[in-house]
Image (cartoon, rainbow, N blue to C red; front, side, top):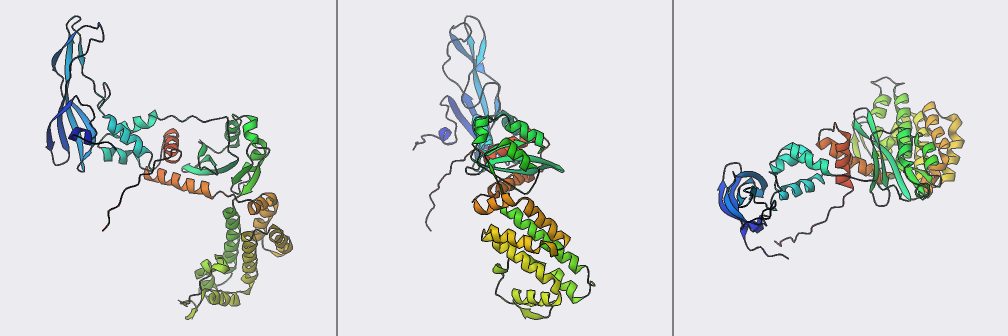
Length: 418
């Protein structure tokens, strides 16, 4: 614990050669009048003796907030003149770098705020500096990729960079550290990047989690020969859910828009899509059927009106059950049994499952998914939304690495008791 003995140390002005002369409070900010003076050192040019000359014109230095107001320091720096070579030098301080007007404590605050998901303009407004200053600080950050090592479990996905443009991202499943971000998702770019790693590093990858995009699968087999491909279970459920919803819409369009069947299929689609084991037991008043029903009773009423939908609903619920119970034999056995009698929508979805059978079985047997990377993509969307988009991909990439790859220290505050 450090003890503060004076006001200048308390506000972060640690240079003992700075004397605080006056503090002026304006309507919008606080202005500190200070001088920088000390005994002259030897001349840095000829090592001669220097004498005190005069004070330089006051420098306007942005500083941290004081009592909730932006502040600036008008600092007069002492000038020294050498007796021998007659050259004049200016006093230097740790408060601000030579030939700079932004204090070091403000620069540290910029770096700290860049770790958050704030826009550059918001950071500049908060610290009462220009956006260009924050941008120059961002440009100073450099991130070097380590091409000697890869994690055993890798997650792949893409995210939207600009309208119509998708970028590629790879993340360590266990540590959630971002391995790489590429400005496009072309196979050539991904292959060229991962070929920078040694063959030994790529052979260490045991599992790669991904969505149901078929473009990546041959590439993963090429890059990581020892890796098992695990499809994300959410995307498997999403395929079944879309097939069920499209089937409902197809059947609904066969009825007149004013008919009871049409209105029942239109208004209670959420109950049809929901897992039957999660249906609420609480009753509600149905304006469509003009009576009080539980969700299960409402579904039974819908299926009595439209018996054709009942078979597809039972199939959808059985597939969900076998997937959640991780029973791959019953899951694919049911698919092969009912496939010939289904409509085109369900056949397309289930044929996709048969084509990716090995990877879906891996998803059932292994405890891995793309959930952590999807959460990372949500944070990336927050960064992009707060900044109203990025024109420069390198700046966007640096913000992502700063926000997600740098671990921030947790500060524990002592709460007062009421």
